[in-house]
Image 1 (cartoon, one colour):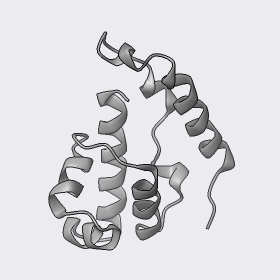
Image 2 (cartoon, rainbow, N blue to C red; image 1 turned 135 degrees about the vertical axis):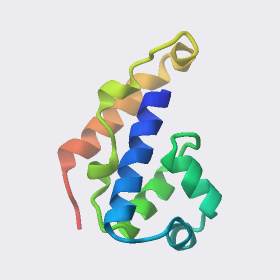
Image 3 (cartoon, rainbow, N blue to C red; image 1 turned 180 degrees about the horizontal axis):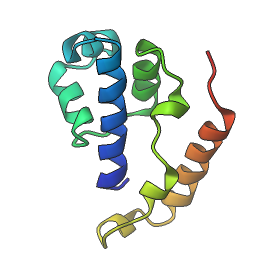
Length: 105
């Protein structure tokens, strides 16, 4: 995934966390990650597994689709990103399917 995608994902997670008045440590404890990991996720420096993202969304009371950035941010913006090659269409299809499915509570 591109840095733009992870940065936007982190921004959305931070905004949701702050709106719920939850600390990074509280969120980390709820999803079994360290406070440092939450910091790195919010800064776009650490990638998430799908189950971790689902846990964060649930803890923050947000639908998963609300936290996932636009698929356009997955488009490679450098030669390094193009190394993902054939995996990108699959990831993009999954993200678009989640967004289309909408909120599930």
